[in-house]
Length: 66
Image: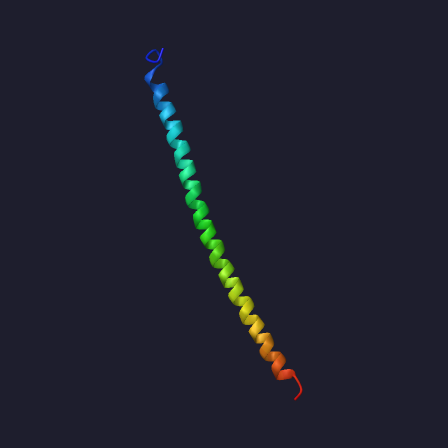
């Protein structure tokens, strides 16, 4: 029974398995790239928030009566 099936069926099965492997590998790489991008953007956002907070603090100190 194993040898009665045509050779191209085995080739198609190998292609399906290889394709599934490549999909899993590619999605893992994309997830890593996406996470690093999100982390970088988050750091930029936090830095911007801290800069604005410092600017507001300096304005408040200048406006306060003595």
